[in-house]
Image 1 (cartoon, one colour):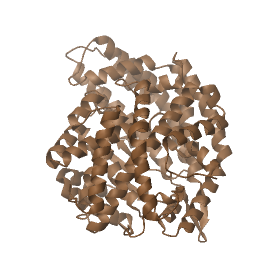
Image 2 (cartoon, helix red, strand yellow; image 1 turned 90 degrees about the vertical axis):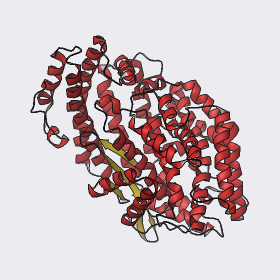
Image 3 (cartoon, rainbow, N blue to C red; image 1 turned 180 degrees about the vertical axis):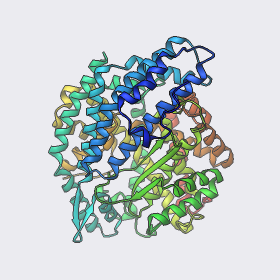
Image 4 (tube, helix red, strand yellow; image 1 turned 135 degrees about the vertical axis):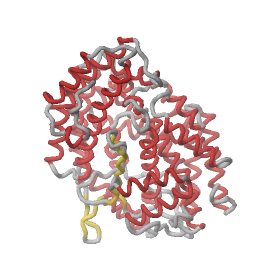
Length: 572
């Protein structure tokens, strides 16, 4: 058995040097592995893996809470180089030991498949390069978090400035939008420079792994074993054929309601005349309290998970200077707890985002019961199914939660559904841009070529928005998408997940209890089955085709029509 003095928590683990951690791996590597010892060996390996993962996420979270503190970044990068890189090499040996043994733990078919793919991809030479990639990613966070403006005489983050885009005064909205774009464009050269460092670095990572390009490397790194880049290209074409026209219809409805000649970028968030202004909460505490009430209406167990997070201080919701301008949910596997991070400013989008991130949190709670660490590793696509489904399941209870009146709730839901329609084409732009960039790496090393490629994709997918005279802001849109710099090829996951989530939501309209039960069961499976089987367990299908999109769009547009005319039962 492993040494009993293995630290019980990541706080103590982070005090250790690699020479103090190494004996744990050496003991596991040297231990006899057979049918009789397998369970104990797996449990001890899981203990080390959880401590490593929790230490990683804890230190990374600290860098996002205050991007201005260099000591936090230094501590994280030091951990990566002094502990994490060595641990990855030791983990590789343990993966090979298990794979070579021919043994198969219970409910481990999918994890074994993942381990085999990871073992084949591993190259020691890539470890310092991956650390450097992390460092450059933090530099992106620092640049974006430092983007503030003076608005009404007050230093304001761009997240807070976005509130002005909800103002009924169109001239005021335009002023705020142009101010925001002007500020981001001040960092155009710095972000171009960062990009020109990332591209060759990622190319070298792929070359070290013997792969033709970084897309192929990233496909293996993300364990995308159930679909191909060609499937993603089918997905793009399906969006172009089916969703882009639906998004245009949504924007045309908005144009008519606003009474404007065309929809400019500062017109996409404002409430049309006659629609009630949405002020769902005044403080983060009020947001949390109302969200808990919604969850009590939806499912008692999910509500209890959220109460645990509130009691244990696992929420950081307010927007403040220096905080990374994003939202996420991290998981601490030793404590079996999620941590939720947001930048709340008081909008309906904050309400939607909270339930989105809570879907991730519920995923962490549900699969924490699995015994082995690698059983909890889930493809990011299904992580996002958990999140987007929660947005849709919670929406019918906004009135009961105290966020809105029935009329306001109907308006909020229409806004949410129309945003979903417009999101799919944007997802296609982001994903197609990356497919181009990493299969045309020489051209993509030139930021001007990136601007041109983004502009072409924008014209293809983002029809219905009028960007005349705003070329610099439009062509540099790729710089404002965190995932392109920080999490390459992640963004398609949202599109695949939203398609799955709409299928689950359609079921819920007929039998909510059954849909929620299927949803929770699928979350509890963790990564024990393949991605298509996770979709199936949740009552959906992993799909890329135009017919599945057409069915999903029909569900959304029918709901919009009913909510617009007041015919819908809000719980439906």
